[in-house]
Length: 255
Image (cartoon, rainbow, N blue to C red; front, top):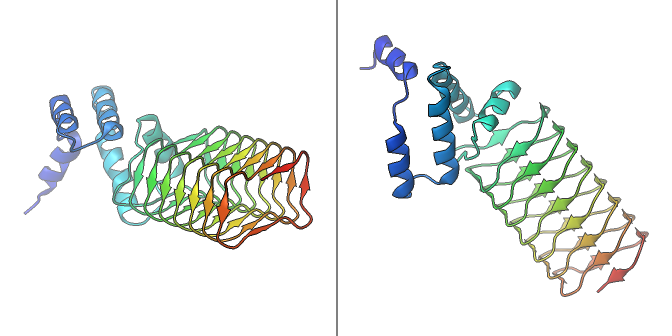
């Protein structure tokens, strides 16, 4: 039976040592992301013992299907918390400096609807079991999903992204929805494998749209899009064709 004293002891000190972390990393029980996070927690603990309680509270909230809280999420990001293997993550509506999920593992979905991010959203090489929703998000930098594996759809509908969107060699199990998105830089989906449709109707892109070598299981719809640079489609394949009715392309479409 767990007593109040047991709970107090649990939160009063770490239940692991640096040697435990190094051993687990060496035995591949945890990956580099987890190892870095745990090392950072141990480094902070002597000056801020309450960090243990805050880390546990963060995990507990996610386990309950709740949002983590804006300031708590920022703190966990500063500690290097990227992996969420048993849960999803909902930071919808938050205002954040940036989001670093480089090579992260997520057990459910990532929700960023109407989130304001001053910098980049880095999801390079991440594995997301379900989908990614960035509906209406405003991002001051770029969205990097290169080499990501996303089990279902990616929604960037009506998002405003000042930089570029990189989905190079990404594997996406559903649709990519960029309807009426405004993207300041390039949209690079070269060599991506997208099982569903790619909706880019009425999208505004300051740079190029690069889909060379992409495999799109459904249709590619770019009707009424405004694209400042080229549309590059060389060696791209689609299951249901390409639609560009009313599309304004600053340079040329290269097939």
